[in-house]
Length: 370
Image 1 (cartoon, rainbow, N blue to C red):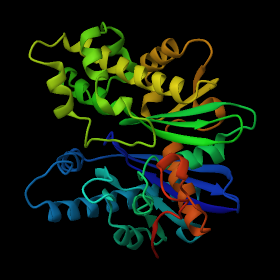
Image 2 (image 1 turned 90 degrees about the vertical axis):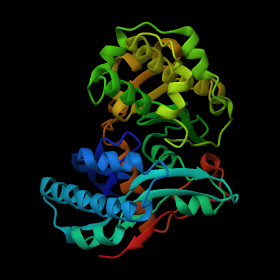
Image 3 (image 1 turned 180 degrees about the horizontal axis):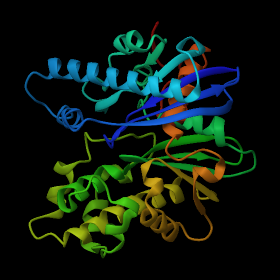
Image 4 (image 1 turned 45 degrees about the horizontal axis):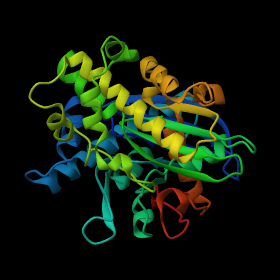
C-alpha cells in the first residue's frame, strides 16, 4: 500500500478539497483515510477571478496568488495528516491541481495554453512531501485539450464490465465521463454548472450558492432565455472539447439575458435547466445506451438540479450520486489528483487520448521533490 494526498481547487472558486488516499501498486484505491475542505479567503478568490481577465501587473499578482495557494494547500495537507494519523514521511507524494485562471487549448499557435496557478516548490517546502503538479500542460503539448483529466480515474474506480455507466462532475463546469459496457472510456466538458448558478445567486440572493437548489426550484423556466443560452455554439461541438471561465461567465451571460430580463428567480431556474439540458443532450447523443449516471462535485448536493436531470433523462437512466457507488461526491476530484500523482510516480499514463484528443497517452505532471 502507498499513501498519496490529492488537492483540488476548481472553477467554482469555493476552496480546496483534499483527501489522503491509500492505493495498491496497480493504482487501485484501497481506502480514503481523511478528507478536508479549506474555504478560500474572499480576497484570494477575488484575485483568482480577476486573473481570468487581462489586468495590470498580472505576472506579479499571479505569482503572489500562487504563493498564497501553496500555503493554503500546505494547511490542508497538515489537517489531512493529523486526521489520518500519518507522518509526512509516510506519504509518497501530494498531487495538487492548482487554480485554473486561463484555459485556451489550441489557441493562437496551435498548441494553446492552460494556466494552473500554484507554487509547487513552495508547497514542497511547506509540507516536506514530494509535490506533483502541472498536470495539464503535457497533454496540451501532445495536441490534446488538457481537460478533462478525471475520466481515467473514473474508469479505474467505477467502470464495470457489461455496464454502460456515466459519471457527471457538477463543479463550476459540468463534465461527463462515459464508460461503455465494452470498456471504452470517453469524456468532455458539457458546459456551465455551478459557475453561472453561483454567480447569479451571489448577485441577486446575497448567498454564495443556492443550497439544495431551493431558490431555483421556486422559479419558472423562461423558454426564450433558455433558447438564447442554448444557441451558444460550444454546445453543438462534438468532443473532444473543454471549456471554463474563459467562455462562460458574466460577460457571456448578461448580453443573453438582455435589457428586459425575467425575474431573478426565473433566471435562476433557467440556468439550472441549461445545465440539465446540456448534460442530458450530450449523454443521449454520445452514449445513448447509458443506464446509470453517477453525480459528484458540489452540484451533487443540489436536489433541484438532480431532479431536472432525472426529468430530462427519463426512467431509462438511473441518476444517483457517486455515494451509491462507494465514493463520497465531494471527494472524487481530489481523489483523482491523488491517483494522478500515484500514476506519475509509477510512470503510468494519466490521460486518455480518446478523452482529450492528444496524440497518445502521456505521463502527466511535474515533480518538486521534498
